[in-house]
Image 1 (cartoon, rainbow, N blue to C red):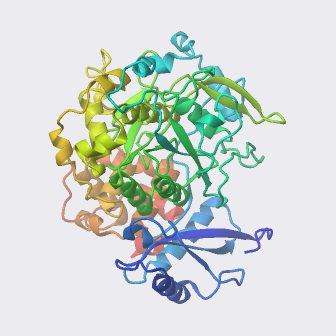
Image 2 (image 1 turned 30 degrees about the vertical axis):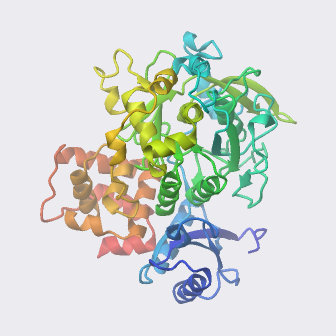
Image 3 (image 1 turned 90 degrees about the horizontal axis):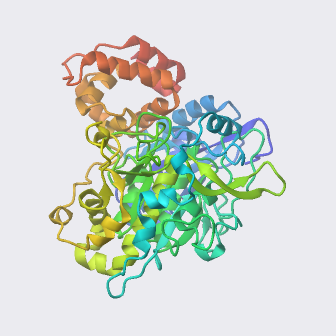
Length: 568
C-alpha cells in the first residue's frame, strides 16, 4: 500500500478461523473468499488485502488458526481509526466460525518515570520524577538486588549439575530491543537468535530515536529492563541473574502504546528460540491470540511473566491472564509503589521504584549512555525474571521438568514463590496489601533453599480452561475488582440486555468493550460507579435497566456496528 500517501492509513485485523482450519493453503483460500465477501476484493487503495499467518508456520495447531488481514483505510485520527477497524472486524466476523479483532495500539499501561537528568523516558516523565525525590534508602545501586537477596543467592552452592547466577538460562526479552550500552554487554545477549517482529527481520537493535510526534515512544527501554535482568557483575548495574542470556525480541516502540499482535508474535518467537523464560515489561488490552501464545509457551515448559501495569487501577494484559505471572512494584522501604497497578491477579511484588538501571539519553547525538534511577513495574518483572533464572539454573531445567512435568514448570515456580520464595513485610497483611500486591516481595535465597519439595497442587494445577474468548472473565480483567455477577449486571445494563446474555457476547463486541474501557477513563468510571450503586454482591435481575450515562458515552466513541446494536 502507498504509505507515502498522506490520505491513507492502514489497518490490521487479527482473525481466528474456525476449528480445524490449520492447513495453510486451505486456510488461506477460506479466508480470502471470506474477505472478498465481507470487505470487498480490494482495500481503499485498490490493492488486494494482504493475508498472512500471525504466528508463521510454527507452533501447535491452535496457533495456526490465526491470520492477519491488512490493508489501507482513509487517514483519520487514531480514535476514528479504531472505529473503522471495529467496523471492518464486525463485518468479517459475520462469517460462520470467524473471530475477528482489529490490532489497535492500546494505552492501558501508564507511562513510567525515570531520572530527570537522563531524559530517556520523556520530558513529562522526567518532570514528574523531579517533583518526587527518591527515598534516601534507594541511594545504593544494589538496593533492589539486596531487597530480593539476589547477591546472597549467587553464593549458594547449587546441587550437582546446577549452576549459579542464572548461567545457561535463556530469557526471551520482549521489549524495544537492545543497544550498545556498556552496562548491557553483548556477552549478555544472544544476537544469533534475536528477532524484530516490527520490521520482520533478525536484527532486534533499538533504533534509539523518537520522532517529534511519537511522544509516547520509549527508546532505550529494552536496555533499561535488560540491565536489571542480566547486567554483568563487572558493570555498575548488575542484573539479578548476571550470567543469564537475553534473547532480544523487539516487539514494541512504546510501553504505553502496544500492538498486541506484535507481542503475541514475539511470545511465539521466544518459544521457537528455546527460551526458558519470557519477560514482558509492557501491557495492553490483550486479545485471544496473545493468551493462546502464552498458554503454548507455558505448556512447553517456559515461565512467562509480565508487568502488572502503571498508573491504572487494574492489572493490564497479559499480566492479567491466569497463564502469566503478574508482578507489582515496591520501593526500598518495602512498601508498594504508589503508581503500581494492583489487584487480586497480582502474584508477587518486586522492587520497581527508584531502581538503578542502564539509561539512554536520546536527546543527544549520538545518544548518551549512563545510569540512573527509574520507576515502573517494568523493573519489577525484570527483577523477577532474573530470580526465575537463578532458580532454573540452580536446579537445572531438566531436573525441574522431571520432578514436576514440563507443563508444570511455571506452576511449580509460582507454588514455591507462594510457600517459600517471598518475604512478608510487617504491615503487608494488616494493611491488606496481600490482597492487591501478591504474597509478598520475592526472596531469592528462600526460593533456592526450598529445594524441590512435593507440591501436591502442582500435580493438579489450577484449571486454565478459561480463555480470553470467554466474555465475562475478559471483561472482569478490564474492570478490576468487580465480581463476575457485577460484571454481568453492569455490562447488561449498558448494552440494554439481560445480564445472562453477557456470557454469550461475540469476541468482537467484547474486544471493543475492553478497548473502550482501557482508552476512555470517563466511560470506565461511569461503569464502575454504576457497579458501586449495585452493591458488592450484585445479583443480576431478569430485566436490564439501561444506564444512560455510560451508554451514551459508549455510543459516542464506538464503531457504527456497535452503535447500531445499542439502538436496537
